[in-house]
Length: 203
Length: 203
DNA sequence: ATATTGAACATTCAAGAATATATTCATCGT
DNA sequence: ACGATGAATATATTCTTGAATGTTCAATAT
Image (cartoon, rainbow over the protein chains, first blue to last red):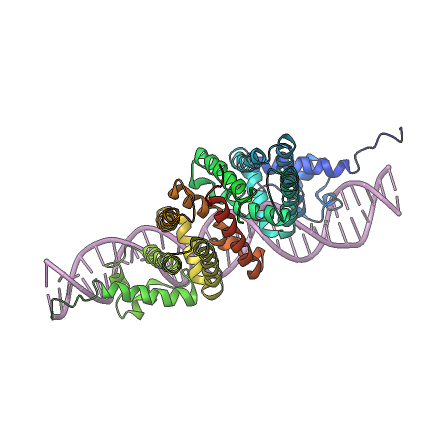
């Protein structure tokens, strides 16, 4: 009633996404039908197409959500370590790895879905990547201003760090080592980054 | 005749491998039959099993060969840069990337085969990885002795570098950037490694 | 007009038959 | 004995087809 209370812009869209999430989690993308999602939303399958172009677009939206939550976790790490870039980078890598690890264990179907979407939608991967780089570049810029690090081009350095820490973002490599080893590697790699970007390096 | 001249220990095995290579290159693993390989060797299909346990083992042997040649290229890089660890590491990453890139372009089917074998035979991946780590650790050890670098645990550092440069070894990430960008990234990452492992870092 | 639907259409999936191929083995020639 | 083979068997691949599902659209209700 009040013009101040902003109602959900698309409550139906969200409803569909929730229903799809529940189905995909339990049965997987391939085994859930548009009819089932529609039934959960108490509408016809045809009507889903008023809110999404097709089934793949629902999955894409969910994948975006997953990647968004991952970004939020990393943003929280950044917020909690504003004064200590070394710790921030270490915790960034640990958080990235733990998120990947936990997704694989706890939500294997959703994880698989994100993987598939990423393979078919380079734009989604790229946006997620850009957001991460921007966030990480901010950390490096701040640390350079405070004197903790000495980074000429924060964007370039952030890019490098993301490339070099791909192991921790991609499920494909997870099974090659136990969790503890991965975590140790994350810590060591963070140390290597910090040493390589420290003031006085490479001169 | 002369006991000095060591004849091929298994010329027939090699012959089979050559025939299989030619077929796999042109038609792919799935589309070439044991009968075809046998015909190329002028023998029966049954006789192939005197030299290999099964078709997959032929592919495994070829994959080992591919990885072996990759290791040889890296070993050559090491030999040609014994005095300059920084250059050696840079050229290592460039060589690793270029090998991956060229394999994907020039021998896509063989590349796919190596990929498949690696997914089914962790032992082969692991051995290749161990060989690379040993080679790279040697570089770090030598550089530490000469004072160019300061690496406490060369094995651990080599391990880290290999993990961090996975992008350049795995075809999966190749298409995400043009060749020049990858090469620049390889150079920059090498620089980051060297800076991070330089004397005085991390103290 | 807008939201929704049932029914039509297009595409994909899945199960089984048919085929092709991988693998084994008894036998042959040396 | 050894190396090799053709035929026999087991396994995998392909093909076919009915069914299931994704998608569209004209028609209906609000």
